[in-house]
Image (cartoon, rainbow, N blue to C red; front, side, top):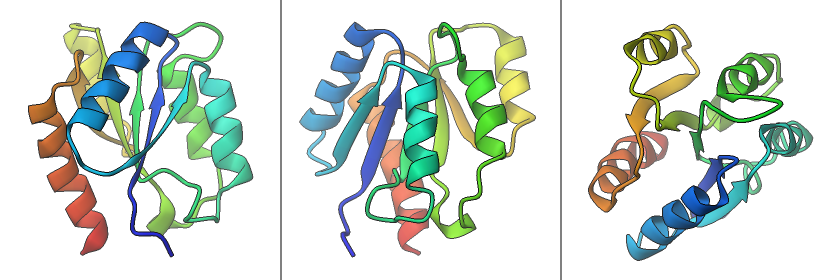
Length: 138
């Protein structure tokens, strides 16, 4: 089994995905990065690989505001997936939303591990990796 951690970015904004990918690469965490500009496609990938630890991400950065399927729609559909508990990735809302109501709403979903505002910085990434990757190892 691979020890390489996997991060999935789900954001319809290609520029933001590029910036996040660069931040992650520059962090030297040695992670695999998968990017989706469609929450639906990301969900289909997760569903198709729901029991494969070599393919499932360890961590998902999820945007809220996306067309067709937004972050909230993704979370509701994700809840319905059959994924073993030990394979469920930590989901972090990475959003430009500054609305307190979005932050409060995120707290209502046990699937959402954290809520942070863009941009993703190296410092935040280290904190997130330390928390969620170390929890997974333990």
